[in-house]
Length: 487
Image 1 (tube, one colour):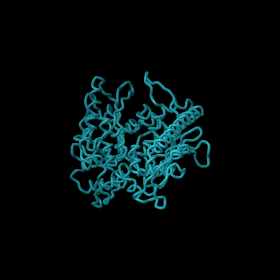
Image 2 (image 1 turned 45 degrees about the vertical axis):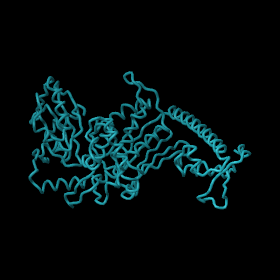
Image 3 (image 1 turned 90 degrees about the vertical axis):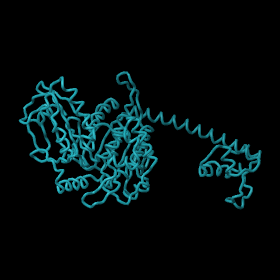
Image 4 (image 1 turned 180 degrees about the vertical axis):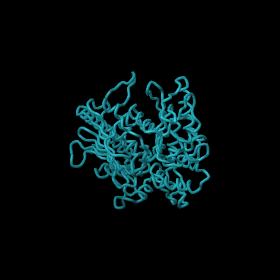
């Protein structure tokens, strides 16, 4: 939020999406009711330090630290706001007075304040807890507004990956050792993350599209969304097709891993110090780009997400449900979560930051990374991000990749030669497949057959004792000393 925007908000006065609170020395108790109402309606702006008439009264500077602390604590406390809200108040100066600004997003969930449900109209905050029709309508509106909340009643817990749930527990503990998800059962964790919901219009309940995308087995994801994929492409030499590609059709957690691995493989990471500490400009920038592609994508749209590394720029694009059109810059940007449940999940596991911080980080670090230009973020039906990458960095990345591939190839050839010589010596007396694998300390039978045994047989280094029955359970393999010179 910049001063000019804040002036305009205050000048236009209170309304459906704007609320003022005086809060000179402490927080007004009804602030949290307004937060709840905005979450349940269309989101909005709360300005602390302004009275109902729009007069700027300011917040006592001595009281400011405690007010901010109380706000953050309450917004993250499920006993106060449930589900809790992860947002930080922004301190601003206007007319020589200190104000606090809260940008409240529209939520995909129904929130309660102190156990009560509040909605918003032009006259203020309404307690609708004891009005069943209004509550039911609110739930219906939330279910229809966000596709991530679609319920799939026939999806069961066993359709989700238990190993990913275990990984999620480790990830949240890394962020917060006392995180409650660390001790919850699978069902409790999924319910806490709002990945199991009930539709109050139809009575259906079950795991949501968000649950399937985040934690589903690959075959379940493809059954629910056959068009789902994220295409990572390197296009520098072969501009008509590609030089490298990763066709990603898996859960969002591992999709993030594979996209970041593609970035690390093909984009340079120049040396950079910030406050005497080396930081990775590449990872900071593309963490935001990749997270945006996965978290804010409209998944029921058939447009495949693309991440294209080109000659002098990186382009990321994904289907979008726009809230405005045009170029996004920090001064005109109002954060709006397209998939709030998925966004919240990514924040919990340390893959996303506060809503809106990504745009600021992209502008801050891309200018340093490229040395010449800002990123471009374009909000339309297809959301696009353009990250400029200078030629000298592209050349550096190509040299690094060539060196890595050469080292890997050399190591692989050396390993294969070593294994060949070991097998030749070991199989002077006929041995079974199991005996050879055990001797080499290998466990993957298909890898052994395809990549080790088959080439040795085809080159004549190994022989079968029953060549007329290659798949016989009594089959053994032997070598001749004279074959040791075969290539």
